[in-house]
Length: 286
Image 1: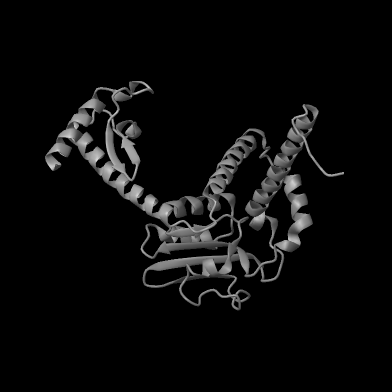
Image 2 (image 1 turned 120 degrees about the vertical axis):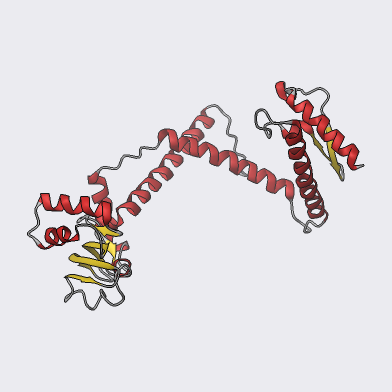
């Protein structure tokens, strides 16, 4: 039996190598397996064979696929035989089909028609109208922070740039140096970060909510790293988050509202067209 199956698989592999799938109609299609009335044909494996696949490799692919298919068919048969009473599979399939078609069309509409440009004025207006919803549950900070190996090359230059009076040139030098040598760094003065996330990059206890007032600027080291920290601004728990901190969320929500509006307008347009064409017939009792 196994010899016969092997011979069949090799033969089928030869059929594949001869461009069996050149046409939609495939005369001489081969039956590969049958499980409780379900049948697997060779044509169903179209596209599974990389170019220039050898006969032996094709046979292995076919054999493995048949085994997987048979197991899935047996599981499906068992599931069908144990359907819960009252489960209306055809209705579920129809609902899923309709939902899939509708969602796909809505996605196409959104991709083609949704305006994704959000002006600074619109963003600011949204923030002013909704900022009470963005109350902080933990402190956030604007800061400058550097974590760098204690033996980093020319680290004395970094120390001098850090401690000197800031200038655009010194800031550029710090950025360039940190991009090359620092393990982690925050040098964007406009960005906000969770206090606990910055503190986690420092030795334990170095930076806490209680120590912010007394630890606004410091430099410290341990056996592996040197740490540079400078606090620029803090927003405490229960304060309103600044726009820069929640800008990403705000933009997503604005686009979500636009999407809902776009789809609702499309539904209304289709309804009006359907009514004019007398495609909509509503039957109500008088």
